Length: 81
Image 1 (tube, one colour):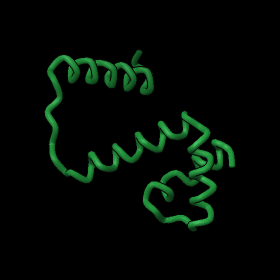
Image 2: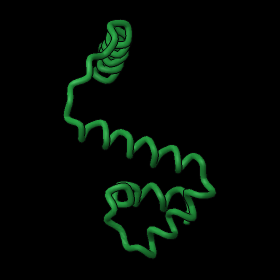
Image 3: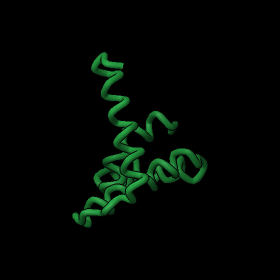
């Protein structure tokens, strides 16, 4: 198994929806591949965060930076920048 194979199955793996034998292959890959472990861990944390279904207030400075970055990307994408 390589990283591309892992990424193709990552959602089903995190959701526990893959065949146990394939799961063993994925876990062997994860044991040896730190970048894939980080991706899986991040995905799991993101899923857990959204399962909480609670609004989280962002710090004002972070919100401003995020708004500015999104506006800049929007302008670039839409041909205004």
